[in-house]
Image 1: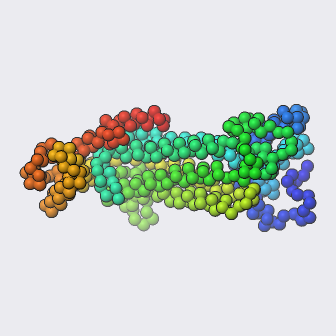
Image 2: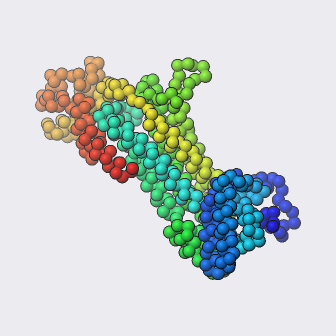
Image 3: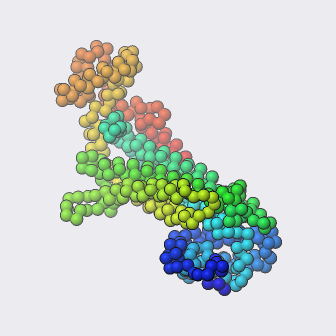
Amino acid sequence: MKKNPSRNTHLKKSPSKLLESINNSIDIDQRMYKEDIEGSIAHATMLGKQKIISKKDQTKIVNGLKIILQKINSGKIHFKSELEDIHMNIESLLFKQIGETAGKLHTARSRNDQVVTDFKLWIRNNSINLDKHLQNLQKSLINVAKKNTSTVMPGYTHLQVAQPISLAHHCLAYIEMMGRDRSRLKDCIERLNESPLGSGALAGTSFPIDRNLTSKLLKFSKPTANALDSVSDRDFAVEFLFVISLISTHLSRMADEIILWSNQQFNFINLPDELATGSSIMPQKKNPDGAELVRGKASGIISNLNGLLVILKGLPLAYSKDLQDDKKIVFSAFDDTCLTLEVMTEIWSKVSFNKGIMNDAVNNSNATATDFANWLVQHIELSFREAYQLTGRIVAHANKNNKKLDQLSLEELQKFNNKITEDAQKTLSINESIKNKNSFGGTSPQRVKQSIKYAIKKYL
């Protein structure tokens, strides 16, 4: 048995220690051992069916691979760095398990199509876990929303109080974001789901292989159409990284709100002690480190997307060794995204809300001014721009007299227009404002309850 089945015999000198060090990827790609064995079993099965190898050799190879899988799963295998990667490690283990018959497995296959097949399988398999993490976060948000359909809080634009909304309405915004993330992930996997196996190094093969069979065995929708593209394509990894980057961007926005809301000047929420840290010198501090780290990790995840794009931009067809770093980049981004999803899910599951303070933040803001302007349009036939200007003058009057809009008497309001009635005055109430936002997607309790039912049915 050769020490390294891939070692080129025509080279007079062995690789230097430095080349071995930079060329070694087993610490990274060993995560794909299940996918590598799965792909090899499918390939061996096809070789046997096509009579490229004998049925006896097919059975011997497949059984040997299954034994190796069991040994790896049970922790009995230690991968060797001198064998470069997971593919050569498993081939070496197969030689050790079944002898020289192992050499027939690589018939009609290159490491180029083997690598990209394994990578596609890994992303497809692990996308299920990613989708589950997203669904768990949606579930936590829905649980908060169900309890807070009438909990009042400020809705912001430009980080300035804009209009009253319910906490449930706010949660539903993130539920929809996560829903689109899940949809993008599904689309990404659908495009990814074509099998490169059988493309060889770049030109296909002269052996009478059946790529439709290996595609079916590996649950791909079909084989890829061009061998040259197949081994050099990393579009699927870029798209997967984009989906992950957008998820992390959404999480970062969410984390930033958690950080703001836990600040003393907002004081909308109380973070549980186990989701915060103290200061090394200031005993009064309660820092939202979990949320800050979620926000911080988004930058690294987004950088990973850029990193793979930069690798690809300078590569001629077909395979170049630069592509070896694609796994490191994707695995790192995937791990960080799953971790941050779990952290954010725990935060939403355990956080408590200072509802009175949230309500007061709306009360102190004149956030119902738009409702008053809308009433003027609906009842005294002003254009919206006229109503907007009139309401603006009333706001200025209230500010000058250190009052809020809902503190102005009917007599004061009628000085600006004598057609203003008590019904107009009622629109300045926060609860009336929220109740009246009954358009589809609005913040009224009735509409929000319908939206929650819709979200449960669609996402859970």
